[in-house]
Structure formats: C-alpha cells, structure tokens
Image (cartoon, rainbow, N blue to C red):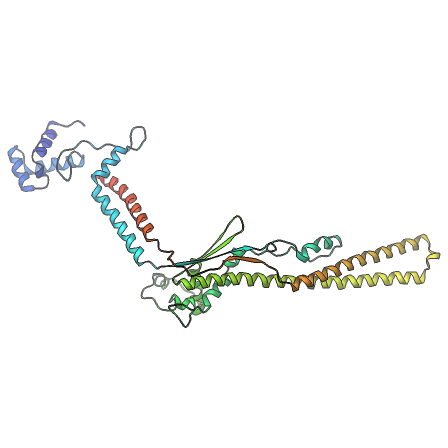
Amino acid sequence: MQLTDHEKKILDIVKAHPYIVDNPEKRESVAKTYGLSEKTLRNRIAELKKRGLINLETGKDQEEKKPLVTEHDEINLTAVWDTIRLKRKLITTISAAFTLTGLIYAIVATIYFESTISMYPAGELGQSGGVLGEFQGLAKTFGVGGLGPAPTYNIPDIIDSRRLKKDIVLKTWITAKFPQGSNLIKYWELDKEKLFSPRKWISSFLPQGNYSSNQKDKLAYEAILELDELISVKEEISGLITVSVLMQDPNLAANIANYIAEFVKEFISIEQQREARRNREFVENQKIEAKYQLEKSEEMLTDLRKKHPIQLDTPELQMIRSRLEYGVEENRAVYITLRQQYEIAKIDEAKENLLVNMLDNAEPAVKKAKPKRSLIVVISLLVGFMIAIPISLLLDRKE
C-alpha cells in the first residue's frame, strides 16, 4: 500500500511512542514535540487504525490485512489462521460460554433410563392364507363373492397407535415416586398448574371460540404427546422389531415396555380370533346355501325322472336331463368342498396361533441412558468454536 510522507511520519511517531494510541495527555505532549496538534495526531491515528495499519492492542504498526479470498476464489487459510491467532481471546471466551451452557444443561437435565424389548412376527402373521386363502380360488370358480385377503398386522403401527398410548397414560403404575400407584398424568405432574407457561400465556390472547374440551381429555392428550417422544420403534430388514422406552424410573420403563409387548400379542390374537370367527360364519352361510341349491337341483331331476321315464326320452328331454344331472353334480361338488372348508374353519377358530415371538423382555436399566453429559459438553465446545470463528472473522474485517 502506498503511504504519503505524512502517513509515514505518523506511523514512525506511533512506533516510537506506542502509548499515545490510548493516552490523550501523552499524545498531546508528543504532538507538540513533532510540531503537530493533538487533534491532528488523534485523527491520523484513527484513520490508520481503520485501515488496519496500527495494531489496536499494542499500538504498533502492522502490515495490511491479507484478504480471506484469493484472486483464484480460494480461501486464504493463512489469513484465517492469523485472524484466529489475533482473536484467540474472543474465540476462547465464546467457546467457554457455550461449553459452560452445555455443562449446566447436562447437569440439570432430566435423567432417563431405557428399557427395550425385541420381538419377531411369527410365520403366520402378515401372510394371507388360512381359510380364506384356501377358499378364494374355489370362490372365484363358482362366483362366490364377499371374500377378501386375510388381514395383515404391522406391529410398529400398533405400537404407534393412540389407543395403546392412551392405555399406557391412564393405567395405574407403581413407582418409587408413587408407591400406591398413579397414572402418567399425575406422575409427570401435568395436572398441576405451572408457575409460568408460555404456551398458555400466548393462547390467552388468541380467539378460543365457543368450544371447551374436557380437562381430563386435555391432560390425556398432553401426556400422549410427551409419551410419544419417549417410545421408539426400530424394525430391521430381518424382521426383528425393537421397542425402546425412556422413563425417569427404571422399573417404570421396564413395566411399560413389557406392557407394550403384552398389548401387541393380545391385540393381534383377538383380531385373528375375530377374523377366524368371521371366516367360519361366512363359510357356514355358503355351505347352507350350497346345500339348499343341491337339494333343489336334486328335486328337479327327480321330478323329471318321475314324469318322463328315460326309455321315452326325446332329444329335447335328453338335453334337459343332461343339464339337470350336470347341475346336481356341480352343486354336490360345491357342497362337499364347503363342508370340508367349514370343518377346517372350525378348527382354525378353535386353535391358538403363534403370532409374535418374544425374544427379549424388558428389564430395569442399571445405567442412565440420557443425558450423555460428556457428549453434550464436547458438542457444546465444538459448536461454540464453530460460531466464534465466523464472528471473529467478521469483527476483524470491520476493524
């Protein structure tokens, strides 16, 4: 950078007397020595500061700052490092502030314990088949309607259902905090008025309309939302399903996880039994209808034989007789098949199918799962450092 003789003179004065940068009295004395006014010297020093030719801390002259981006649009790492070195105190302060904040959060954050269960859907679960599966081909052949595919049950969807979560929220649980038992609404103290609730304060300024929901329903809804954050389901490619439950009480976490397992098994079992009963009733109705059709076709054939002996058949009677005999055979085949399927349906309704294989039941955790204090502190330090560097670069470019 080209400097005027006057600017060079000011730099030489500052180099010889660095204390004049921040000391007005000594600056006035030095200015008189060099034949300048204190105001002129002060203004020239300020201009050189803005141009980065005088170090703000020591008062010593320095070289022109290197650009952060080179002519080839590349980041100048040397300039970045010089700025970091120059602003190390600011960077350290910001990083320490973030680290301290993370440490405080890690200390005061609610401690959670995790319990898990793992299960496999059994072979029959989720597969179409059973009575309806075997009967569908026959039904289509004879035009029997009303059959659909066997229902499938997705275990993660069952666990994520509002029905299950509401049962968990309203169920009475024995915990160390409430030895006599309480539901999760009381356990989380959602029924108590908070000293300050930002959401409630904001909602008080919004139009509410004429609708007012039940207080119990509101509390249950809030508890379900909180429980939703504490239950996670993971499904592997192999079919293994892992359910994790986080709770402040390790025994409560294990009890809820095991309750989820029992709910899933019971729900699927009841639904399968209901479906088996529906299948049996459907096949039974079809069997009754097939028996009626068979008896009707047999009566028509018998009437024909009584009125028209086979020795006196004309070509027209032979054709009618042939059709009636074919109808009897067809109805008999349908009835026999439906009779067999009806017996199978009764057996299928009576037997207990294995639908879910439990691999691991939940046990109370011996170590906390959250918060991970070391990880929180390390992340806070890194975040503080990443935020401090851009701030330092920005401030350095403005000086």
